Image 1 (cartoon, rainbow, N blue to C red):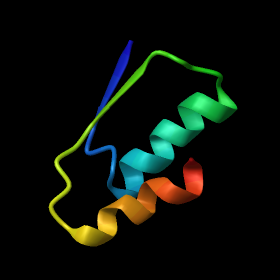
Image 2: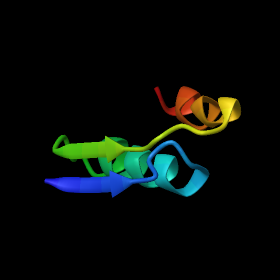
Image 3: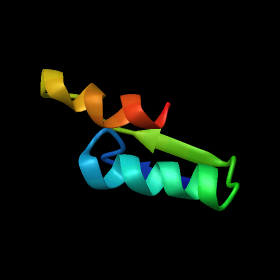
Length: 47
């Protein structure tokens, strides 16, 4: 299991995407507290 803190940020979202799609990891836990309305946009292109 890999826990990614700050997963809705620019770096965290790219790391999560890479681990999942490029390396096939399906044991990710993404944790974040969205404080800015724009943060969800970091996750949208990867979904």
